[in-house]
Image 1 (cartoon, rainbow, N blue to C red):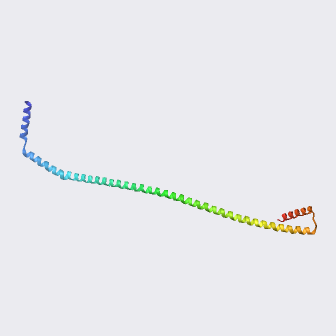
Image 2 (cartoon, rainbow, N blue to C red):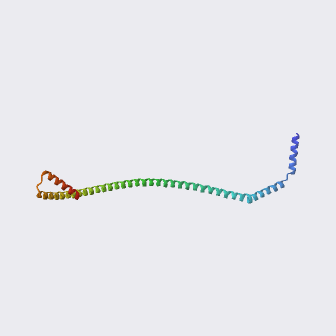
Length: 176
């Protein structure tokens, strides 16, 4: 019961001290305070927050665009690299083919040159052979004439003939 009395007296004190004018005044002041806070504190604060939100959204959008652009550039670079590799491979293959063609040309030219030198050497050998045969014929004719003149001068025995032929062969060998 004591509690009921204490509570009852507290309510009684509250009602006695409660004035509707004070409550109304405090309510009006609170509303004015809220209006001022909204105008001078919340308005600018919300504007800054809105700008910050827009800035972050723009940065995210720009980063996404940059990422997409970087991905596109990376793909382009990879394609260019692939094309460059293919082109390099083609160049190597062409160089090999060209080297093979040049090798064949060089071998062919070398064979032709060797054949030409061989033919030239054969012709030169044939000419030298002809000259040697002509020289031998000339020497044989000279020896024959010399032998005939010696034979006419004197009659020779078989031994004298061999001796004479050997002498003339020696003389002909020395003249060479």
